[in-house]
Length: 251
Length: 251
Image 1 (cartoon, rainbow over the protein chains, first blue to last red):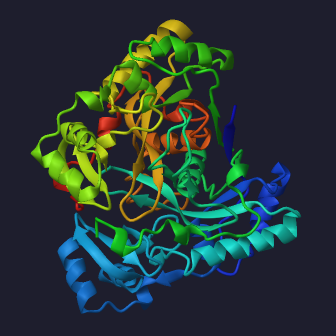
Image 2 (image 1 turned 60 degrees about the horizontal axis):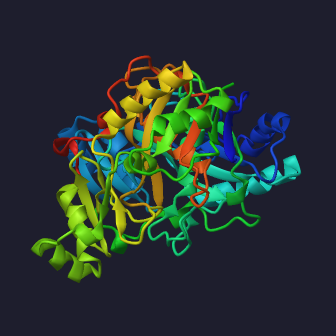
Image 3 (image 1 turned 30 degrees about the vertical axis):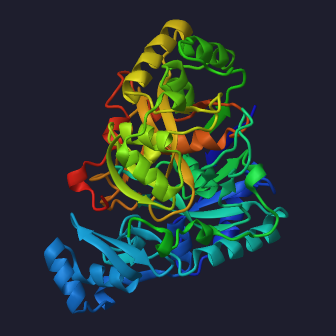
């Protein structure tokens, strides 16, 4: 019999650039005894804010392409300029949304640039510059403070092709095997599992999102019972979840 | 402070066509006191098997298109014929996989036709003919037996564009609001949430998948703590998660 649980940690304040996020998360996690088999799932916005990954639109000068796209889609050209700055490619532009490939390789709406949950009317938040590095640094700093090293997953909410709505996915990870590979193994009938390659880090991100309320300022969720996916070293990170362009049928 | 938990129910035997699946699930769920606020997440294979949604390849005669595709992709033409029979369109064919739109409107590999976890070397299992109807029927039958009416979600593991690996998603649902719409509401800063529309049923499917082991024959998972998404009537089902072709940028 196996079980998992996800608990949104109370007591995380509004995060500002330069805040010691690891210390804040450690304080919130300590009463719950976060241990080596646990996973801390962290909404990227608090990571981005602590790293100063914010831009004030008043300081952005939109270029010609941003102005054109903004006019076509009824958007603020300065916001579009930030999206373009964060993008390697724009895959599609329609319905007022740009579907972008970020410099990291994530395919998502508006390159992850977002204005919600950001204080100040004209400030937008971007994804961390290197979310896997952010996850590794947080894990190391949490280990110092907790005397244990839970795995760390950093998440964002991504829309999907073909399906409505968003699911949280992993954009950074440390200490978790992001994919569980059953290919070549046997199912309960002894038959080979040919196409079973589970995006564990994304399922953890989704499970954690269910535990929190979007309006309740609960960016950190402690997940228990997924210890079989936690690894001692930091592992390949969420970058391992990116399908290379050459293997992708939908770019 | 909010929390969810997911428990894989032990004691579900191999399911055969005609088995009373609701009675079997009720027996497994009853010791855990499944109630009105709970969600039972069920891997579709047991639903498909109980409904007889199986085909013996010995009884399939491949047509010309199946023969051509099978030769190009190194597959069994009879298996490909079943995939074509289950498909409305084939969107892509590459890397030995057909990405299909099923008659229900799901976009997934091989139209959900699968040979793993099926007894008998030459038998394949298909998706339920109407997974939302299957979910509604199971919920009604569970209510009779349990004296409570947990929500029901039927799942499959789908690959994704742009990302490696599979996540479980909802293909049928009853008693759950499949999407939670925060659009137009306010975040913790009082700022409007512009693009927050959460695929709750898919996140529940993903959370449940984490609780089970693919080789342990644990098709049914009891999820607690998601009661705010459970509804008294059956609701719109997983069909509400399908993005219409006209709104989709990647078909």
